[in-house]
Amino acid sequence: MPKAPGTCSRPGRHTSAFRTSFSPPICSISRRFLALAGPAMATLPVVLYFHENQLTYPLPPGTQRDLGYGMKNVASALAASSVLFNTAYHRREFLGAVGELLESMPDEVPHWVVPELEGKSKVLPLGCDLRRLDGARDRGLADAASGRWGDPREGPLVLWNQRWEYDKAPGELFAALVGLKQEGVAFRLAVAGSNHGSSLPEFDRAREQLGDRVVQWDAF
Image (cartoon, rainbow, N blue to C red; front, side):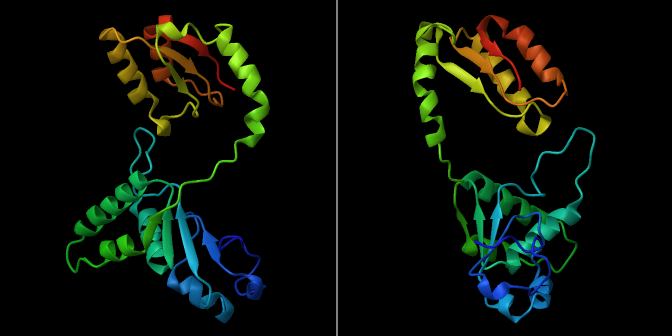
């Protein structure tokens, strides 16, 4: 499958070999781009794949959203032949945000936009080939049997394996786990994931509040 628009060396170059134009939302595929890309590009189906979007992506504390980037997402979605989302939740969230954005316009609200995007959008989850992990299955079972992850009788194992950053909303998970602990619900907690040198206060508080439930606390 060809690279996304904007990653080609020059619009219209070598497009005769392409069968589909597949683009992430960071690339603008407005109708103007498609018109300038040449006749070969004009005949290709254009697929826009949203793994995130600029209308609902979590913002760092103290920052304000630049709606110009969100409008570019909307324009690209309208220009695309079809729009794909990684999850049904993401699709609903984006379409809801588009509606709210357009309703904030002072006049001439284009009410047709959301229905058009609904009609051309579907959900296509990201594929995961996990066969490379098959070799670690026996080791994982042996680690569990040895008690490395605690005693299963102490409750199910809850795993955090995301980045240690604000946009993953760690505070919401930890708040829920603290609530479960206060209610006497049994569980074990393993915290992994990547941490690029930043220490979020949510993690420091969680380790202190949930310390007796922690079976691993180590970023990479």
